[in-house]
Length: 308
Ligand SMILES: NC(=O)C[C@H](N)C(=O)O
Image 1 (tube, rainbow, N blue to C red):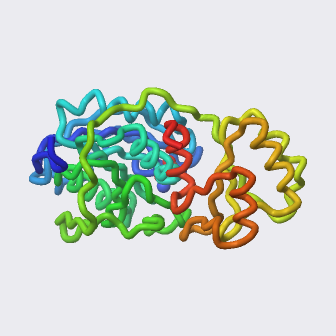
Image 2 (image 1 turned 135 degrees about the vertical axis):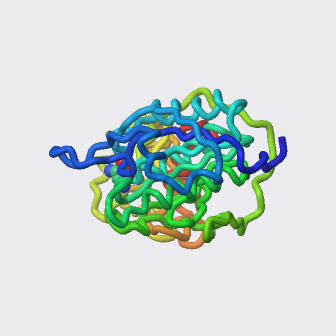
C-alpha cells in the first residue's frame, strides 16, 4: 500500500461525543447526537465520499481515558480492510491527547485517520461543526495516510495539535511545525510531504502512569516525594529549560529511585534547549532528558507507548 490510498472512497465516521454532538439538556451541554445525527446536518456530503458510522461512545472529551483511546485505535485497526479512511468526531478539550496517542498507537498506519470536533454544537447558529466535519471527511477521502486533526480548514499533524483558546472558534494551532496542509473551497491542499512509509502496526500495551508537573518558582522540594514510584514524570520547566537550584537534590533523588524525568517547557512553542543555559546543563547532568520540540501531549503519548 502506498502513502495515498485511493481517493473518494468509503470512510468510517467514528462518533465519540464532544461539543460537536452536544445538546443543552438542562444540566449543561451533553453529547447526545450519534454519528447518523451528525451526518444528517451535512447535506453537502453527497459527492465527497461514502460514509458509514460507528458509534463508539458519547463522552465529553474530559471523560475520555487511555482505554477509550485504545478502543478508538482498535476500531481503526480492525476496520482498516473495509474502509479507505477514518474520521473521529471528538471533543476539543482533549483532542490533542487523542490525536497524539493515535499517532503513536498506530505507527505507519496505512489509512488516513482524521480527528475533528467543534467549539459549538452541530445545528447551533454559526457553528463550526458542519465545516469541520465536512473538511475532515474531505481529508480522509483524499487518501493521505497518517493521523491528522482537521479544524477550521487547517490540517494539523497528530503530533503537533495544540488547543490554545477555550471558547473561540479558532481554538487550535499547529505547535512547532507549520500545518501539514489546508482545505480551501472544498479542495485539500498539502503543504508538507507525505509521511515516510513503513509497516503498520497497533501498539498493544499502554503505560498510563505518567505524571506531568508544572513547575512554579517556589514549589517546595518536599513535593517531589509524592512522585516516587511513577515510572515517568514530565516536568514543564520555565522557558529554555532547567531545574531550579533548590529543587535539584529532590529531582536527583527521584531519578536515583528509578523514575525517568523528562523536561519540557511551559512556553506554548519553541521547545526546550537544555544545552543553552547553565541551569539546563545542570539538569541534563543529573540525568533529566530533554523533550526537545515535542508538545506535552506528544511526549505523553510517546512515553505511554514505550517509545521514550
Ligand atoms: N468543544 C468541545 O468539544 C468541548 C467539550 N467539553 C469536549 O471536549 O468534549
